[in-house]
Length: 140
Image (tube, rainbow, N blue to C red; front, side, top):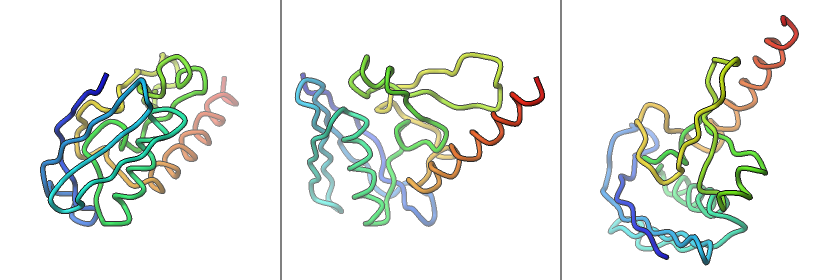
């Protein structure tokens, strides 16, 4: 079943809305496509929907844009089990509260622009979170 989400391309430099776009994803075929006047059309397939999303994200970054969706947040990461059980549509939100369960977010739901970042910003955030978590465990 194909689902459609309307969101915004965010300019990678100014972090402001640039253009409204339509993103479609198909859970049964594991495909994601996005179409706009600026970027024309991008279609990808992958191992799961998160894999597809990351491919789209990397292609958009090369053109200077981000998507304003949870999948572009710097503070999200999916475990293998969560990816397998949701076809990659769900991811954990990593917070500074190490004592509670991590919220689960749908990668295709809208996000606050303040949490959106590049793939490298995401990697840096998760690496720093892991260091903080290890330090937290040492103190317990």
